Length: 460
Image (cartoon, rainbow, N blue to C red):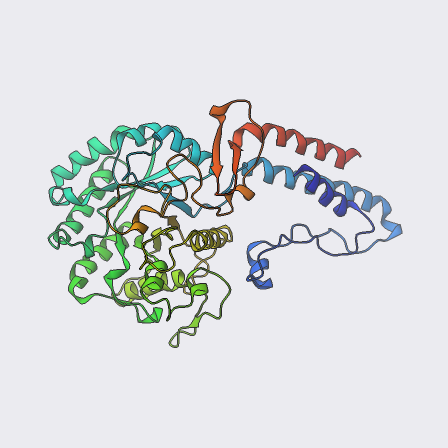
């Protein structure tokens, strides 16, 4: 890395360098030049495009200032960025499910997340071991109220008691940033739950606000089944039978500035119609995509179309400014005979391409300037989940912390020898095992290398 930086610096200083810009970082072919400029502008623009002998002393000083600025910029960027897989992907989180009997303890999971440089996760309860283990870390956690206790929380006193016993004891050491009240309540098989949803959401929000934690956003994740129509995206609308309670819920979100969370799985759409839906369209691969005939917006992947369908449905209810975020999305690496497309290759492709989009800070066609927040499902395969085989095979990792398939993380991660087994986490694909040292273990070495580059640039 230090060598690469030194080469770039020498190019910037060379009087033989003819280009007016240094090369910008490259994207995969599917990104246009317009996208490149939008997300990764040229690294350096020379301070002057010509040489004038009469201004030699001025240019000498300008060159020194430029060299110092360039060196400082590189130094600042690399010292502040950290070394890890998901560096700079602030909108990317991962779901940490626990429906299994063989998962590593929470402290090992924290180490894994830290090594990946992931700073956001979501759990499906308020597991005290996890909340305690994640204290004083940089991991932001969204917790969940189980569906089974929703009926108790439409009583304000019960809701306040729940907050005081399940949330407050862990603050502020543990960074709890959100509370999800239930999961897919609008479409749950127990149709009596929906009547308790809005009161429970309001009561938990009020309890948190009264204790000074109004910054913890309260919401609930919904499945795409809340929509009566989703194609084309502009036709998005909510099911009529839930419209009354949905209106109340959206009113709360609008007032509290909380997001609308959606569980969106292009995999299910492809599985149900593999002959009608192009695989490349659902996997984020290059494809012709589709154009919404009513808005002329172009969609090159199904996930963004799903998210925008929800946004249009919200707008049709009369609300503006409610951000739509993805609480779950993913692709299974294994399935039953009738689960078309559930393969390691497709899972790796979907998750790798999704990560690339996240690294680029993309928004959807409807909201291109609003970076889409996404939580990937899931961190681990969960062996006790009921249902078809695919339900137990969404994880990036197996319970032994080896990778389920090669999603490209090992190529992005920093590899180095380690003298202590406790300071590294094992990544593995079906082909090989790679030891990835925790970011902070090699950071000081990189820092010193960059200092050397700075000195050699200024005085070499």
